[in-house]
Image 1: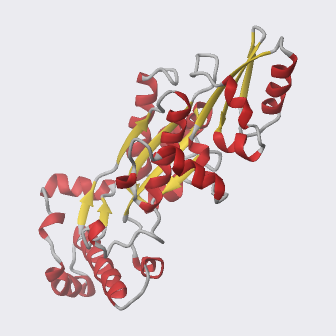
Image 2 (image 1 turned 90 degrees about the vertical axis):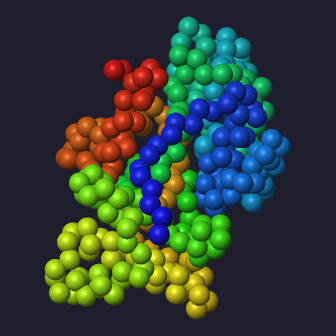
Image 3 (image 1 turned 90 degrees about the horizontal axis):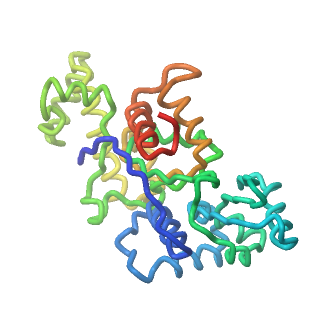
Length: 298
């Protein structure tokens, strides 16, 4: 069993149409953990396959910024399309429309010709920001309630942790309370192996196991059951039924800054109640990172 700690990374989209394609591929490959297939020429074919297969959800991670003149009739008409599109934000300032949208909107509405008005984001466009989280499945269940956001998550249907690709073991992402225990007891989690399961099982059944020992036993036994099921011929999507909520996962969210503010209200500040510690441990430093980048007010 491998151990990870919760982390995040802000993915800055590279310039131009190539940057849009690269951002979509980067997010999409998280789902199947196929990042090793990325290369200098793989992004555009990847996106084209998504379009042909009507797998357009991944296209949402490609943020598009358009600048349109309100004085030109054609451009004014185009801008009005986005004004009435709920997945786009349009700011009309000084005779120009500053549109922020995503590639899915263009593909599904057959507006691909609008890419001729593609620009890099200015201070008059509302920014969209992509964040890559590494955390527990239990935490992503909370994050994915922010349904306005675009999401891509590592799939337990298709990722078979019994394969060499994953080291023939599951990875557990440490919850806050366990990390606090590790602070007191060092690498206490890492000293256990599956050989300790009988001893831990006895203590758990007797009610003499510590909180950390109960947690370790639950995760080690889940890993052993998962490996046994796959060895007996069960597929990853069947064996995943025994995976614990602390199983490590990767999650990509792309959203407007206004939607990230709502995310911070709930997951960092706690405007509707105390955030879950495993959500706050990521959301709070992410909020500070947004401030340092000038995306939200300090």
